[in-house]
Amino acid sequence: MARPRKASDPDTFPEACGRCGEHYQVAARWPDGAVCGYCYQRAKRTRGTCACGHTGVLPGIVDGQPACRPCSGVRLNVDCQTCGAEDELYDGGRCWTCVLAATVDRLLTNPATGTVSPELVPMVTALKSMERANSGLTWVRQPHVTEFLQHLAVAPAITHEALDQLPASRTRDYVRGLLVEHGALPRRDELLARFTTWSDQALDRLPDGEHRDIARRFARWHLIRRMNSAPGTVTQGTFLRSKQTTTVTIDFLTWLTAHGTTLDQLTQADLDAWQAGGPTTRELASRFLSWAIKAHLVEPDLRMQPHRRGTADKLPSVEQTAAVQAVVHHDDLTARDRLAAILILVLGQQVEDVVRLTWDDATVTDDLATITLGEAPIDLPSPLDEPLRQLLADPGHGRTAAHPHSPWIFRGHSPGRHLSAAHLRQRLKTVCSTRAARLGTLADLVKTSPTPVLAEILGYHQATLERHAVAAANTYGRYIATRR
Picture 1: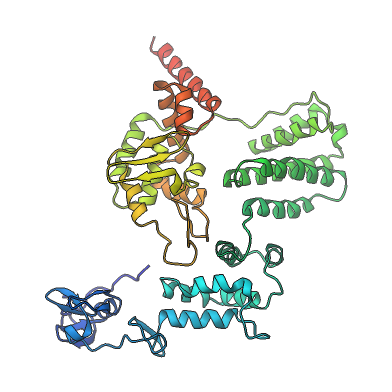
Picture 2 (picture 1 turned 180 degrees about the vertical axis):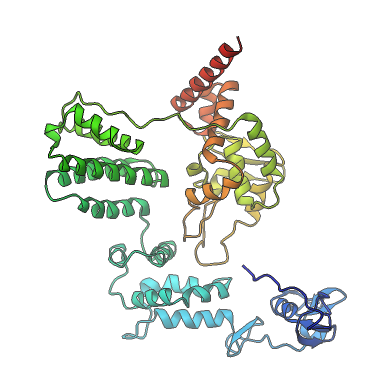
């Protein structure tokens, strides 16, 4: 993001800039007058085709239009000494792209061999060809990034396992994403791998013995097995629920150990005491108890109050309508945020499903814009289609090496990954609570449309929408009874 301009200062700089009319320090004097530092920088970065047909940097102005140096008479050095192209120069007469290329080659060349590892060549090529070379140079010159890339250059092998042995950091995850996107590493389910590593470390909090072995079996043969069998990659929601379930399970088994109780000695009184002695999140231990019963580790008649569902607030219809109008006409929101809010407020979609939409799910023509959430495409009439059309024209994050061929509508900051559901949920807080908005939308939709039709169009399981329909009917019934 560009730094904001300082306030114009006519007392210190009485001469106004010939281009912007503001009072700043004069950086150059060109045929069209004095040029301040801000306009000077903008001129160096103005590219296009001059009226004479020259394509390149257009620092001058002729008849109100950008013009090349010969046509405008502007004297400015924008000729790179390395590649010869016209561009903004950064260091030693070299453009940003050439400085970035030299820096990347230096960091990722193995000093022992004098060459770049063949596995790293695709990533090196991508970094050197970034459209925003200044952003790439800023990134690689950070001390922690420089150190990581130098270690990568001398690594005996480029594998997921080798990267896993390095300290966890954002830099490691980002570089891993670049390596995957550019073919140096195979794709893998990162959230599944993260949970596997995390659970192994978390379970070490339990003392050696039966309880740790049982907890490890639960994590491996129930939680991880379910993740592996689920269609597609593990979602952020599944990842977080599994972490929370594991944490509560560890706390439960630690509590049993402290009370000198084993699972084969577990009684209903123990379970009641456990739940009564802590927060409602202890209800999540019911998932472990269900598994333990199936595994014949505890008595089958034991019961634990399950984690409650259906208690979340719903956004009232009046507030939903106001939120939709605000989103449609909200100029301060990005096209990405506006589209996400529309899919939640109008079509009742979960944030986790929204961020996983790809351009294969969308069709945009001059006359029609559709989005496919279930088995049939849904028309987005104007003005609901405007954010989708804007994203198609400029999907974002396309000027770095992170997304060479990204299919995601909602591109994330990490290479090849879609936007984080948690990040999007946080951004939309200024508009509405995404959960309350989704539940309110579904409550309204199930009152007016058959659940089988809605399930097919919106991509929900029919049983899920039937639960919403029952809840909506009960609410309406209680309202009628109260009125009577």
